[in-house]
Each structure stands twice: as structure tokens, then as C-alpha cells.
Image (tube, rainbow, N blue to C red; front, side):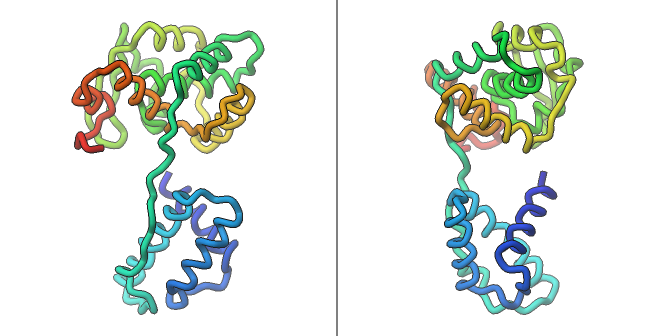
Length: 231
């Protein structure tokens, strides 16, 4: 994931300025980069994430002995807080109706199935991608959290179990992360859900649904695998 992210960043830098060197990067260059991708329709958080990546590699360059024009402390990355969208209960029902419907392709059903599973469990895409049907024992799912390394066991409700039983290829046939996110956008447009939906929206949907039911935030922290409740 990190490799693909930085490869994409490098490609974007080359598309903007294919002759840039470390020593030529200054505040003016960074501001022009920001405006260039803003005009192309990139989200502010995406551009800020790019600037954060550039700043990281400028720091590595300094440690390697390369002299820079710019003081890294003066680089204001901006907000990198990602998509905080979540689906409302009626939107989840629309997605579920389509998942169980007759007129849906196999690939759309699988992708939507993985997304709905995240909405019901709060699991990240990295954890869902590692799961196989062997991780499902009785009414529980047991796995090692990809980000924290912590063993987790989550009870599955009736809707989550039905989701898995209905499609035998779920957790057997997988897709690349980017393909899932691209196809989710197409599915949401098809269903008339006018939101910027990525797989991570499933995690936000789980959290907001959990708190909407007035459940304790301390329990939500454990279910999401956060080490700090502030997250």
C-alpha cells in the first residue's frame, strides 16, 4: 500500500514538473504544485497528503546530506484528515437490497459484500483482505489486526452471517484495493447514493451506527482496535 501510494506521488510530481531536483524545491514550487492539482479537481486532503509525502522525502534527502533551499519547518502540509463520510440506515438498506437482488453481477456482489461486511464490523480493508472462511468459527470471526498486531475476536450478528452465507465466493475471491474503491463509486452512482464512498466509509458507518444506538464509546474503541480513545 505504501509502495503504491508513493509511486503515485512520484508520477504526479513528474506530471507536474519532470525536471525538478531536491535543491530546486521551495515554497513557490510547493504552492504551484498545490494549485496545479487543485485545478485538476484533486481534493484538498489528497493534495495535503501529497505535500506531506514530499516533505517526508525532503527530510530523508537532508539526512542523506543534500542541501535544500527550504526550511522543512516552514512547510505547512495542511489538513490530511480523510473522508469522514458515512452511510445512513436507509442507504445501507438500498445497498443490501441490491446485494441480494437478482440483477447484480458477480463482481459487484462481491465488492458490495466486502463493503457491507465492513459496515457491520468496522474492519479496515487491510483486515478484510486477509480474511478467509477459515477465520469464521461458529458466530465469531477471529483474526490478527493488521495495523496493531492485536488478536481480535468479533461476534457476528445475523445480518453479517447471512451476508457470508449468501455468497460462497465472499472471502474466497479477492480484488485489489484500488479496484474495490473504483467499483464502489460506480455502484453508489448506480444506486443513486450521492456520496464520495470508499471502502473506509464502511468503518465510519459502523462507528456512527454504533454510537447512534447510544452504545458506549469505550466498547467502540475496542471493536475498532484503537489504542487511544481520542481516535
